Image (tube, rainbow, N blue to C red; front, side, top):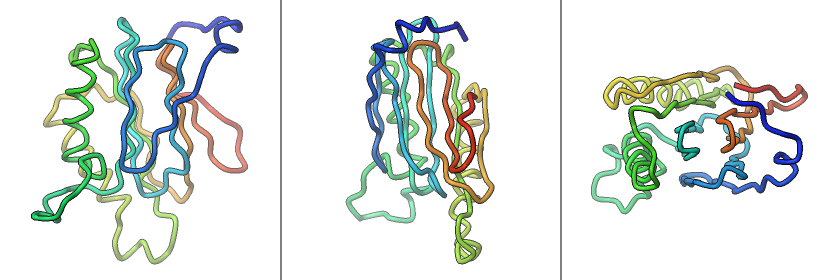
Length: 170
């Protein structure tokens, strides 16, 4: 990705993406951020040429288990990913030029071993990435740590923060 001038970095604003939500930005001077991804997945979508970025914070693999209930599309990977892709295209991105990065899917508690939500989210994302022919450029998933991520809409870098460790870029 292209280097970002220091002056530009000072002008960046941050847009927070909550749990079971997504945001799109066409403003190059924006970070899209979400906090404390445990078993949830944070998925970034970025079209470098058009500087259109998106971030989805999904909690669970599939809405199919909740038929008949009123649900938020972005709570689930199978309904959230198509919604974000459609919004990215409406914002001017080209699906064929989007790069996707995925974060989270951790197993934070021993009790999570029974439910394996993080692992199920990772498995579902892998399946959906094949189905939607996503260009997945980075996987920072699994383990026993939470992650905070920020998508830099100037250059597509994702800054990752894990507690008690230095930030790094994916």
